[in-house]
Image (cartoon, rainbow, N blue to C red; front, side):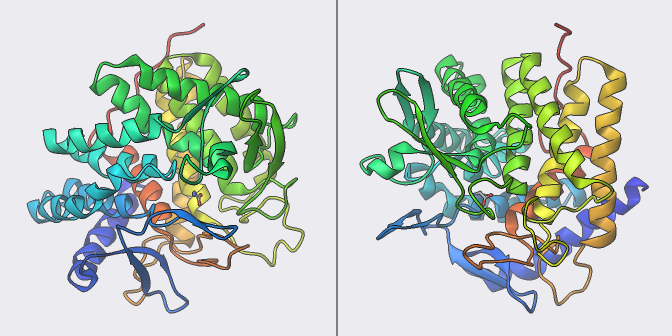
Length: 394
Ligand code: GLY
């Protein structure tokens, strides 16, 4: 598909952002309802347990800032940057909220692109504080160390928990390592990646969604799911987070082994897809094809493939990943783009959480973000994020 299609998708994003901004006040979109209207919540909505129930809180707010930055890059208009800066002031409070690993998502999609595009030192300081909160979630055991996923660290459930999603929160630590010239951030991220490799990845290269560790020994006590179909199933977005996260780990550590691991995870993903390009929400939902899709998983994978393409030590293999990433983008543009003005998201047919019945056939803000990240990588490499530097052969 010609890049004009991708540019039109970015123009559509810019139009929708400008239309929605005045209606939002201090709220941030997270998923669309059945009419296509955004459901919103304030940035301050923190993650936490209510009884035994876990709520992820507002881990979406940073994506809105990143979308505004991308719209600025697409249109060249400073009003998007002004809006991004205003929104960043609302998001900044979450840099002190260490209750969730999703602090990575919040700031790697907001402050970090702002730093890259504008060089703003205040945004850099905010992102560095957030990275410090994420690093404090590192739990050290006899068997390695991991970044705990869900909940305050004075809650044992929070300390024990680890989720595959955390792999995509590690770029905040890796950015901080570079920015502050403090390798301890990268060591924390790589320690987490190693424990995840050993505890989450099954022999067929599918992944578990979540794991609980023994706090002393680091032994895996159980593998389970929170947002997938079953403890034994492969939740599609979880597999996407793993592909993305290990690709980013290869980029940060310059170690080809993590890229090879990401390729194995990607091969599993592609084998389960067959001819499809937009996946079902869980590869093992027995009701398929009568079950929701998850376009956001496809967007995450497309973005990862475009990074793999640039990182791969073998340029010919890199070109294959580029082709696969663009094929997914083409399918998303052809079948999921919310062109109708009544639908306020960019990418339809995302699935936030089927078990919790939230946003099960919706635009989900992280889907819009990773789709936009991939579109930008395709049409304006180096503008939203630095271009990945090719790894040396082993
Ligand atoms: N918390 C990340 C996700 O829903 O994928």
